[in-house]
Amino acid sequence: MASTAISPNSPASSGEMQAIDFSRVEEVRQKHELLIEYIKLKSLDSLLILDPANFAWFTAGADNFREVNGPPIAAILVTTEARVVLCNNVDSGEIFDKELMGLGFLLKERPWTEGREVLLNDVCRGRNIGCDTHLPGTTLIADDLQPFRSHFMETEVERVTELGHDIAHALEATGRNFPVGSTESEVAGHLAHRLMKNQIHPVRIQVMADGQGWRYRHWKHGADRIERHCVISVMGRRSGLHVAATRTICFDAPSDELDNVHQLATLVQATGIYFSQPEWSFRETWKRVARIYEKFEVPDEWRAAEQVELLGYKTVEDQLTPDSPKCLQKNQLIHWHPSVRSSVVGDTFLISEKEVENLTPVTNWPVLSVTVKGTKIDRPGILVR
Image (cartoon, rainbow, N blue to C red; front, side):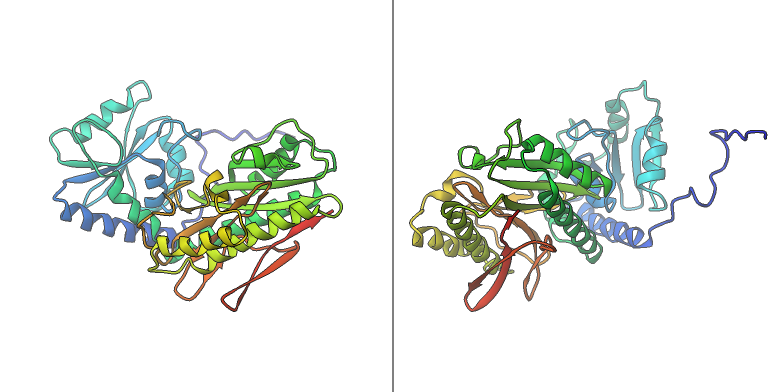
């Protein structure tokens, strides 16, 4: 039987062609309208977007890098009339076919042998351009774009909700199934595998065996074997958005010490969740949290590590501290992850008008119920294996 060769120039079959996502088309259109208003307000000719967080926000989830923390391989020139992708001939096909299919972007490309700065300088020359990174001859507008990223549209809420459920599922499946005596890095590998199967990039994985986190709150993972208990924390990214969660696993019954600090960390977190209300000054929210630490005679425990931040298209959109003047807003993502000695609890929540929605809920996991101001808040307990 004769074989059939498929040429690179052969037309793609309908099964190989990516369907246009019309919800993304509309999302990009609305975001373009927002930036048009901004361009006019600031009396600019156009905007140049290079920062991967802003690129992902504007394109409803596309990436403009080859490797995490690597240099951007594409930029977007936003004018009142058009949105133009600037990149080289090597990357343009993949970006348009995989990331920007049918979203209404134009292309201006140059050969890969020409440095990126040549193309950027060409489009900026003689124009009043705002740029989200330091680029000679442009006006830096990075801080102005942060509020655009931090208030989600309905389609973004849908994407981040699905992401949160997938991350929680992968985290809990890992916690239930890793073999006794595994090393921290082996467990991290199991979790990374589950995430990547669902097109989630593991931005940060922490596996802290037998109280490791008491000494090093930002410990990642190492060669230590898990003999008694461990805390697993993860942050994942998909479509440019970030979600984080934490779970605790114990072999046999937890010690009184572990049980007590886990309950205290959970009470701190539940208090923070309850008082993360729209239009509340974070200083007022923090006062309620600090009282819990004081009441249980660990008033300085919060100083050992960060407690909470706003997430989004960056891993930290805003680091919230006790004296942060920021007011919390509807449709912001807040990651509460207080730690008390060897215990860490963490989940990501969406602030809405009526309630704080848990985006990383437990599915097949013990639940610890906490009551704050008469409201029962269910939080992850310790899984005993």
